[in-house]
Amino acid sequence: MRHFGLLHLGLEANGDGKAENEIEYTSYGRIESFSVLDRYEYEDHVQAEFPVDADGLRMRIRSVNEEDFLLCVKKARKEGKGSIEAEIEITQDMFNLLLSGVKTAVYKRRYFIPHDKSGLMYEIDVFTKQDGQRSPWVKVDLEVPNDDDVQIPHVPFALNDLIDLPPEDFSVEQQEHINHLWDTEWSVKISED
Image (tube, rainbow, N blue to C red; front, side, top):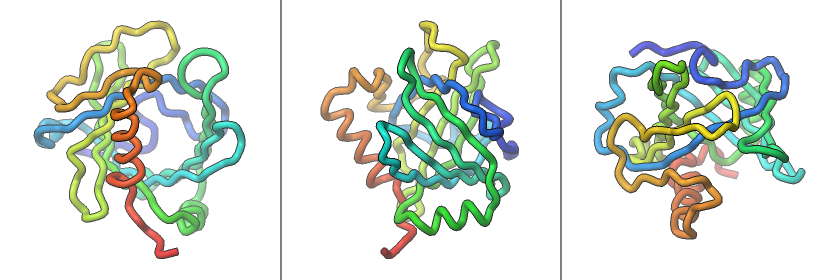
């Protein structure tokens, strides 16, 4: 399936550096067969996060299809759901320099699946593990334009061991599992330091 260019799908920030609300519903689950994704458009992403010591502020760099490079800063909203984020395009040199300063990165293929006639898109992230194999655990996001109560239907294909609660309702075991995915299974070591 063809690759899309930067930010053509979903409600991602537009890379102009302006702060915008990001409100998304996230689920995690084990996919039975990757073939259910074959008919959907996708992008390949490499991303790394940087700790920022400022009350929940997070910074991330991302490469999209090795063509577009972004720097994103986000922080939880004080009121309402989601976060506020500002994203700006950077050069490949800037991306590579920042990437050289981290020990791990996340390599993923993001598939875009239409939610319904509203124009919203599911973003299904399939992660590559350290051994080069795909993780059976996927992350599913549905970004919405506002934080009104939205009736979110389940993902349009089977996921086992589905975790689709708001993060504040995760059990201790669910939170530990999600942390393990991000910290171990989905993080690929890129530096020996």
